[in-house]
Length: 126
Image (cartoon, rainbow, N blue to C red; front, top):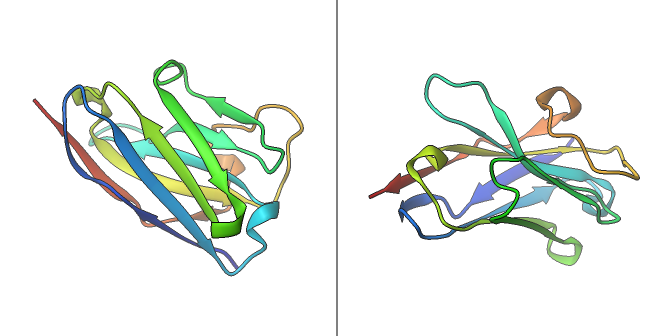
């Protein structure tokens, strides 16, 4: 069993940066592929970025030029940074993980992930 805990959400000014982290408990973190998803009111949950143990990463097109995902296996943590935030980035951000490795870019589909955190609210204000 894996427990995922997100932290670092809150209110952010438009044009600013988002830094949120996901910490994993209860499993060999170094063997997990970890992803970030988000869900805005009325919208489906969508993949933002993912990272394998290699690490190989994958980014959604809507954040590709302004997003970085990093992992620190010693701290059992995956970090997500998004720059130049806009109102469309307002959402609940969820961390997800699965004990599966991809040699290529990891998937950004919700069905690929087994374990989920509770989410952290991010609100971008102008």
